Amino acid sequence: MESGGEKRKVVIVGGGIAGSHLAYSIQFNADVTLIDPKEYLEIPWASSRNMVKPSFAERSVINHRDYLTNGRVVTSAAANITDTEVLTADGRLIVYDYLVIATGHRYPLPTTKTERLDQYGAENQKIQSAQSILIAGGGRTGVELAGEIATDFPEKKVTLVHNGPRLLEFVEKKAAEKALRWLRSRKVEVKLEQAVDLNSTSDGSQVYQTSTGESIKADCHFLGAEKPLASAWLNETILNANLDEDGRLMVDEYLRVKGRTNIFAIGDITDIPELKLGYVAEKHASVVAKNLKLLMAGGKESKMSTYKPGSAAVFVSLGRKYAIAQFPFTTISGRIAGLFKSKDMFVGWTRKQIGLKP
Image (cartoon, rainbow, N blue to C red; front, side):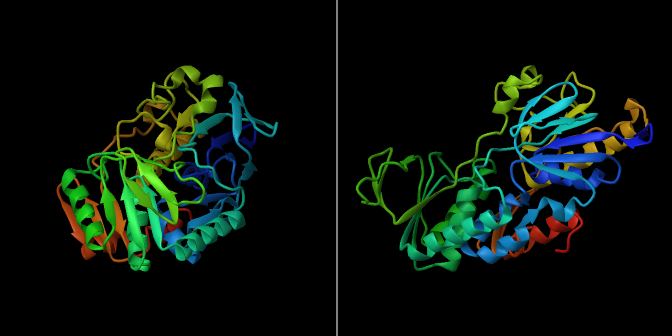
């Protein structure tokens, strides 16, 4: 753990679910620096609830300082990496003994928690003042947002447009069909196999054009599509050869970047063929925390923990009480599934994982 009386320096780039859980787990075992462009961790699967109920974001947007009480937070993006240092966008050089890349997906988010809460308040006002709402993208984000709006504002006309043949393409067809039926039962208009041009409105007409020539009138729109990976910056670093064709970092069974002994990667940025889910990112963080503690204590590499992808359980909330839950052995829907996620969106459970009150 210590060399010459000093703790080993661990630098974690990225303050999402994976990076924050790792920082919390090793903060008393190492000299930890967390580099993140924002001052807070946001629990991403609570975003749709935050938009219809902004007060919910008080618990799901968490300042890094709240859980990282024995480490440093550098509020900046990482710009480059050498074999010994990380260069930040604001010009700081941060030395490391061990480096962990956890940048996940790229979200254009404000710097402070206050700004993020204000943003949710503004989005809520946009929803409240609209009579008709367009959501582009039928993945988890789009489906959950449609469900939240249909539940809290049943008088509003909600249209969900998705360019695929079915919603939620990362789950089994049966689960996707259940979600579609639920949305339509709440009078959400779902248009499949169409794309929508969000820039197609002109002169304040608020009429959007789809790829099939349809016109959709909506007072406002929200984008529910998946965000791009936050890995482009690695192309100009020593890890450029470690990126696969999709921009993900190639890792070994210990979650080390292949060919590197002291650089790890966790969360969505890894090339592991599995669903990129929050609790999977937490598992990554747990494995790397064990391995770093072992290595810093002088343990043998042969004793390192390995990460084995497993069958994933997937939850998609549908309003406050209902959900779709896909397990390896079955798919369930309705109120029982909703008990797992929809009431609190796993926010209390996630907060407890980083030492905070639910």
